[in-house]
Image 1 (cartoon, rainbow, N blue to C red):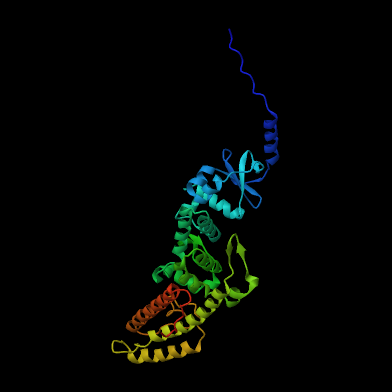
Image 2: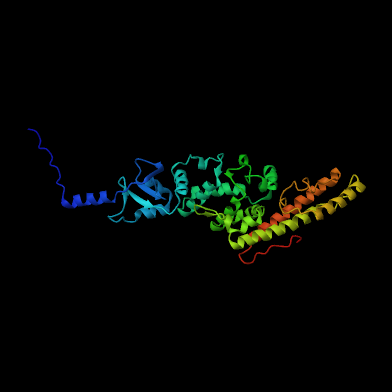
Length: 352
């Protein structure tokens, strides 16, 4: 005797009403570049949807974990049956963040791959916002390579000439020797990011870099640019500080070069008369030219026109040694300024 067939469950009016309600709450969104068919939640930014895995988000981010524990109202929107979260981030920033989060082998963690500054900025901001330390740490690592604590790392053989000629080059660093594609203008945004994310160790190098930017571009609103959550406009206080540093570097450059000439023609000199004559000529040239503050931290300052040493070998080496010590001292003063407690910092006189 054949077993009785199972009876189909009767659809109640309440079930039908619920199905109709769910269908009514279904929406369609433009698919972003990340859309996993078996994903379990849809994040929407600027009208673009990203279907991802709720479990992965919760695993790596306490912020998302807490977000997903909140009960959803019956009338909550869904997309392909998945809950929806409307994000306040830009679609571009969110794509960068989600790609890095879901793929640990992506280019965002490839130490040899050059990322744009926009990408690194998004990694820092969203990695901090959603408390994903791995993404935040990678962004910080890349920025610290470009804006290091020590002078020798900041002014390497490659960056010396690029920093010296910065206004004539589209990129602040030669792309082949760094992991971030930076323009000189981006250094303003680096200052804002450092202020917002407690990365004060980036400030000395970032501010020095900003002093190479024309004063007009530092202060006028017509140069305002905001991408994602990053602003390229300095605060009034930081714009004033940049202008003050420009003047400080300008004076320090003259003082440092002049100080490097002091011992020229001394007892160890190979050709005292010739070197003394050259020193007088160099000093006259030094105080008759506007050198700017461009080459303050550049070890080639003594070889570029309008100041180029014309001394014997021994005097030239002594000049380079003294100049190196002086530029290191300026670098340390800059660090001391930014390390001082808020409100107590003051720029020293260039000759201190």
